[in-house]
Length: 110
Image 1: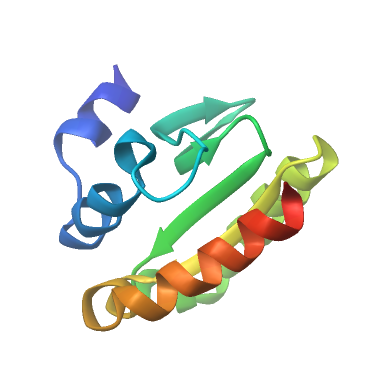
Image 2 (image 1 turned 45 degrees about the vertical axis):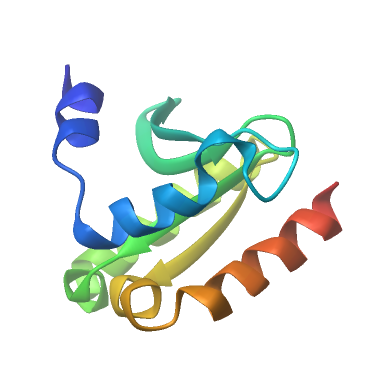
């Protein structure tokens, strides 16, 4: 239920990135949104190459949230999952540069 609620209430940054990722438009890799992995729900996940893309707002700069994100990333890394984070403003202001970075990561993992 929580994943469905998150999918139906995406942020502007999530919507913008999802428009790029969905439907294998630019890569041969399928991404899923608001996917559960273990105890956590991740923003975008490509199971074929075990890549998670997380979008963060300003609240992620608070110490408690940074510690939570670190623990979460360590857990996902322990499962062999690579986690990449972008701030919402990066997506909203420069999606082209974000896409270049994502593509470079995909090429390294493929």
